[in-house]
Length: 291
Ligand code: SF4
Image 1 (cartoon, rainbow, N blue to C red):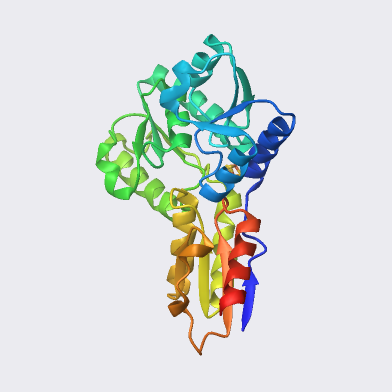
Image 2 (image 1 turned 30 degrees about the vertical axis):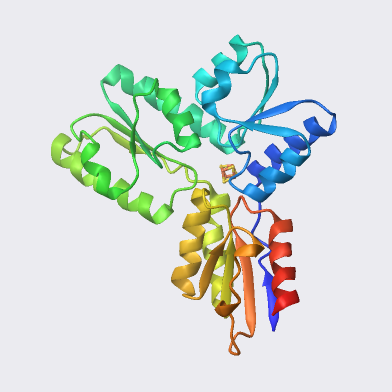
């Protein structure tokens, strides 16, 4: 029986950058507080915590004073920076450059919409750290819609700028763009003031076709990801739709050997952009040892 790890899976460059930043700081024996989990993967968070990094929640920031604080790849709203600076903290900003650029575009879009009495729409997951950071660029005024079903929350008579959270699905975004276009045209006519910006990160989007191919090549797929990872859920569904014998695990302890039988000749192991390669290797070893 063959066990193959997908070489394209694993951390995206934004996460690698944030982790390297954290490692450099803790390796210098500096005390480091990370605002929120550095990556949606418990195993990797634990590894860095064992090296001395502490994870804090946004509700803790008022009480953090004179410390070093890491902003993770998802980014933060402007108020977070203000509070940390007010309390004399040193900020290590690991906001992914792709997210940073998106924040700037949302801010610009909002300034334009403020002048025209329009609205900013963010296609993303309500309460997700990246989305909170984006909403923060609009003084909290952007409307967040999670799916095409939420479209009624939009006022189609107003000028509109639409942006997407970096990890959303391109297909769903395209559907949304089209529907808003039709409904805005109905209200505003041909001279509608509506612009949609495809701000989806290709580090995630490109994994879809790669994972479809990978899932076809193996009898069983073990998808490794933290349960809180948005792109983990999305990519898992991509694999599951291609290969129904796809199973989601967060660590090797969750493997059920009943998933494999005499017809299982090849097991593929893959994961999200927040899944460390060392964890996928651990899963492969665990299966190899006991199967
Ligand atoms: S998925 Fe893309 S936007 Fe998000 S952290 Fe990775 S590289 Fe940056």
